[in-house]
Structure formats: structure tokens, C-alpha cells
Image 1 (cartoon, rainbow, N blue to C red):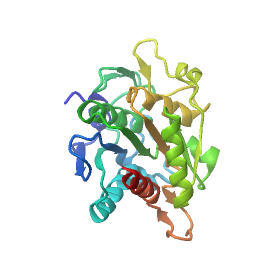
Image 2: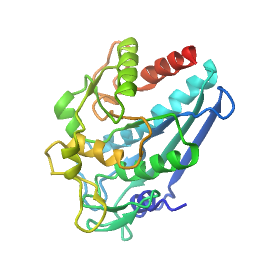
Image 3: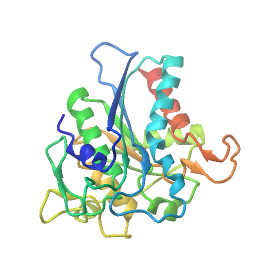
Image 4: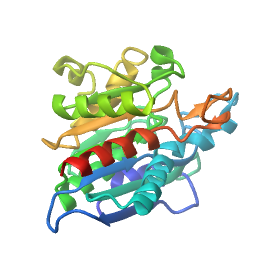
Length: 275
């Protein structure tokens, strides 16, 4: 399928990667769908750039973006809104073995863009690159939302209280913010000025998969993903701080929170009501 970015992340595991696609046809025939894309890293050891052993057991939660998409689609199947929706989940493990991807490797994404892999632990954006460009190519969506436990940096910025919000379309961003206020799932917008895109330029490929180390790490992930959506209205939610809670919350127990399901359900119902 030309998904070398996803295949590269999966190279270190014996479990074959999966690319899950779901379609819901509730709107008018031929109407452009809303696209939902979720990171499905079922376990993330960091690859060759291995993570510290402390709390690595929690890296089973790295599929929370994909889980959110599955949860949203279950709600959609029950409520049956009058809207067309497509959902995509690139899924794999990120392990370290003899065939694992190495720092310095260059892969070509589905879109044709080449990516220099500086850090194998910045793998979520690689698998999302293929998924986003596939959805844009095959479905020509009206808008795209993606969900990912993408960066540890978002916890430093926002803790466990809000998801990081980035996007390329002000109107769509405001729509997501309104759904956030209605649902109680908080988001906080981070800037995506053009200067940040300079941080991911590579000397040997089109782009590289990290920016300037610890500086603006969450934004670097966002501007990387932006490279694969073209002009399609797009919003990225970094849920690394909100997808997993150490303590019980008013409406979720400690552990996996199901974040983004309420927010996106609210957005979908509002869209369907105004269609």
C-alpha cells in the first residue's frame, strides 16, 4: 500500500501491523465525510531509542487514540446521526529487534514525502502520517480529526487537565472548542506558526520526525502531522495527558479515560443537527 512509515515502525515486532478502516454512511450519498484518525500503538517500548523502564508497563495505553475512534464509532452505530463518517486506525507495536528501524533511517510515507527518522520513539506521528494521507487521498473528507498520545511534552504544558489542540483551520478549531465546552472534555490551543515548521526540516529528506529536542515538542508533533493533510480542515488532539488518569475522576475511574469520545460525539450530533 506504500505505507513505509507504518511498516518501518512495525519492523521490530513479530506481530503484523494492522490498518483498520471503518465507514458509516448516515448522510447524503456522495457527501464528503468527517474523518477520524487514531493512533493505535498497542505497546510502545520506544524502539531502538528505548524508553526508561520505569512506567513502561503503562505503554499499553499508547493505543488510546485508536480506542477513542473505536468508542466514537460504537456511539455512532447506536445514535445513527445523519452524517457520513470514515475512521482509520494505524496499529502496531514499537519494539526493538534485529530488524527494527534505526535512527537515521529514511522512509517514504504514503503521500510520497520522505521522513528522516531521528528518534524511533517519535513513532506515533509516523504511523499517523500514512493514515492521514491515505484518508485524504481515498475519501476527500470535509474535515479530519486525529487523536494521539503523541508527546510527553504535553503533560509538562497541560498536565492531566486538558488535551493539546492544534489545527490548520480557525473555523474548525472553534467548532471543536465549542464541543469541548459542551462535553466538559477540556482542550487548550497551541500555536502552529510557520516558524515551527522550520524545526522539522531535514537536510537529507523532506522532513524529520522530531524538532528541537525538548523545545516545543508537542507543537513539533503537530506541525509534522500537518504535512500530511494538505488543505483539508484538520484538528489534532494530543491526548497523552488526558487518556490515562492515575486517580479517579468524577465520571471515569483511574486508568483509561476514554477521552475524546464525549467531545467528538457532541461535535457529530451538532453537525448532524445543522446538516
